[in-house]
Length: 379
Image (cartoon, rainbow, N blue to C red; front, top):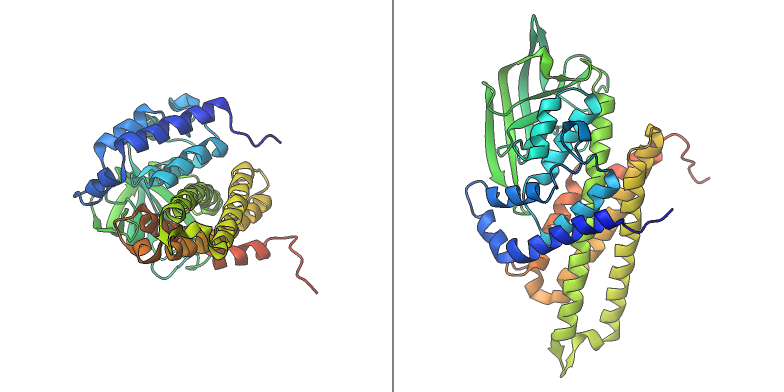
């Protein structure tokens, strides 16, 4: 298989990188972080103009029908450039719509940049188990009533539509009985607590109090949403893996540049062999992570759910290990400056920390990997 990116992918990558370097600089990002919404309408319009919103959307809804490999190129540049716009949350929401079918009008709005989405999946008691759902969906004559609270919903307060997982039947941790809904974020009975996360992005805790939704809001069949939820989450993990590779690449580059310029005893500290060894190890972790991210992007659309789960979890676990090593080494090699907000390195490290905890950490995915059929434990 040829792992070189195509000409079209390179064009997407180059266009996004040029925009980041020219109009989404580190200083500009600081201003966006401190704004009321924590996002930029101008940046969102530019992402739309560059075709990033239309990239993962089917052609029938005005998109380019891009694959996970196409998205890997975009997420790499987003990670490299520390972009904090709600791109990941929106394309993950769109993936739910694609897998479930229907709701074409929403996909058209995503492709045009008119609709921002968020996925309300996690709950305080669930940790990384997305099937652990206490939010209830009670059937009524013409729809459902939602009650409960979702936590750490990425860009929840900035979204126009929410994808929500709720329990319509079964016990709290059953995979059966899960229903998925898509509904306007301003639906009566929804309240949000918006806040900034440590990586300077936005999240919200969302409470549903007797929220009435029509049956047309269902994604898929009632009580049978787990397979869609599981597959969409794996797609999200694949995007995060690609973003992590971009962030680690930026960290490696900035650390190498620092070692070339910072002097001690009259010579650049990069001349010291011990530090050269650290940089070599950082490079190896990065390249292994890059390979695993690509493998996940290839396999995430596999019709074999076991193969998909195994590969995606292997990638998230290996990349989790790489993120920890690269991030910690970069901070240490920068010295005290490595943890100050004045340097992009600290922000890349914070973003990697949040990626580690999003949609399952390293331990979670190691456990998921070994739980898949066909895994053989050592005697």
